[in-house]
Picture 1 (cartoon, rainbow, N blue to C red):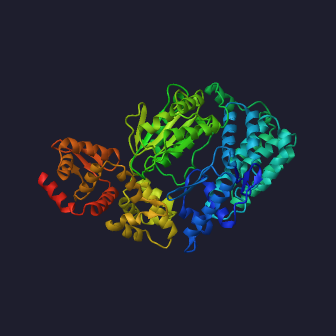
Picture 2: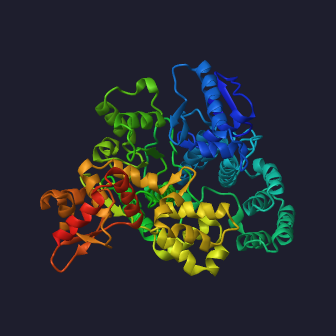
Length: 626
């Protein structure tokens, strides 16, 4: 099966087109391909088909479209599940090599890795192979913002790779071969200065100095007419160098920077088969976490990733605090240090069905180029083969939403060169050698900045800083809650910030307000709550009924009518689940704990539902314990 989106969307089987239905089914398929192997909510699919004006029967029509697509794929491969139902929507499950967009990104990463090692000829050849996958604009003919954003991202990747490829080819002395292509590119993309720079250089190296200077004047006129700006200092310096016949402009060997980088890194065993690049896309509105990013980069520095041991970093924190976003941002920033590939998997550790290590290993092995028929059957054999494929390479493994240490251990590389970045609501303290970075909610300044970025209401936030800070306070500074509020404000530009603050002020409705599309603070907290031991659930509910800002450890024993030892053990479970926080000791030496405000609201809801008769009794027992 082949899925092609780098041009008009096509589905092929054995090289023959597979009809996928009408416009609605094509829009649904396009949206799922934009997030292949990830869950796409029904709400997002509705937006992909109807934008802001869905009919009342939209959900039914989406189900019908998905059913139609399943029938199409069943006719091609009856033994394979290609579309899986995964709340709150569906996931399109594709194998490595089936989606041209993924192939393009993998080859682009391989080209840049080859260039970093000084192999410019190999880099240029791989880049040309990647660029040849494009048949036209991505998702050409598919309307809607859902795929347009991904198409724009891919187009930027294409142009960036094309710039790099032409740069490498010029360094190889191929100025005569690329000058015509550069003329077209400079005309088609007049505001991309790099194309003008490379065109001037190619013309000059081909003995066409006058035309190189004319190309500069054309570029200068474009920037002044369109932007009211002069060309960059780099382009101006190139013009001056051409006028002076600077000998440094002549074609020569590979740039010193690439050669030095290769020498510093030493020989690298190139991996057989695929170079996987599986990271989800980075988010544009990422805010804060500068200290945490620096710490991650320091732990996974070049001397660590290429030398002693395997750096393992665990990002831990409450649900919705931004662990996954930070991991993805860090992984993208570290990508250049791991030229042999970036492996990523969502372990679904917060749900009822965490992915088994054996299944994860099979996925990774296929991504590394191992044919499905060659993947061993047992967990131990898969882990051994996986470690063999990672040995001697530089790969970053990102394990998102891990349930526990047992789920993670088989996925760890065996030797130096690779690194692992894990996210989990649990601290995974039994994972030997892991550096734990605990994430707290955003500080007020970062949270206000994040709210402005998500909502697009920068001017309103600047005019009403106190109201914005109040919204942050009511959201506990939790990034998930702020993203939901920001999305609502973006969708309702006529709402003043004060209206949102007023709606959040009502504690009985606050969790209702913090729901938007497939995002829900209540659902996120509920995942942690449902994973608890039943006695820990009971303790959480009863403690939430105490109308105090914090509480001592003995209060847990009192409300649960149990001994201190069991109460302490249960408080440890609640702390590890990020549902309560230890704040220190009081004068009597008792450890004190506090609830995050939104967790307290959720726990009170559960108390009203699960044991309404306990409300008064709980408060009485706590008072008696005093």
